[in-house]
Amino acid sequence: MLTKLALLIMRVGTGGLLVVWGLVRVVGGAGTGLAEKYYSGVGAQDTFQLAYGYAEIALGVLVILGLFRKYTLVGSAVILVGGAMPIWRHFIDPFGRYLFASPEEANILFFPSITVAGAALALIALREMDTLALDRLLGKKGQLNG
Image (cartoon, rainbow, N blue to C red; front, side):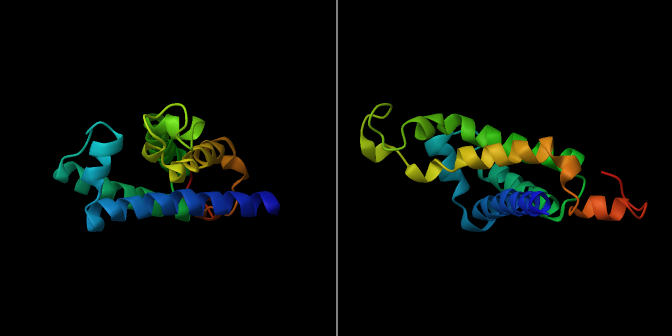
């Protein structure tokens, strides 16, 4: 039962993060600034941020519910692992003592991103054990396979 609960928590956590970041892009309007500051301006256009935000929200909801996991968990991992890669210095040097020009440039709040990336990959690896996912529950009744 602990495995089922842990996988449910990971799904809710990673999917919830996607929803929150999608809302930051759609409602908060902060996505452009973040893209410019941490991702060298890649995807900083307002139209892209809006579309990407809505896609993140939709994907996050599907991950939380556990629907179409064969595809949604991969999409989630691409976003969460891909988003963690450009901020790798914050994992190795969270206090900014070695890899940053000054300690103020480091952001210790990025450190948990490595855990989130690992959770996204674990959800893919353990998909068959996630029996509380909606596609699994509906699939038992022959209504949906995932």
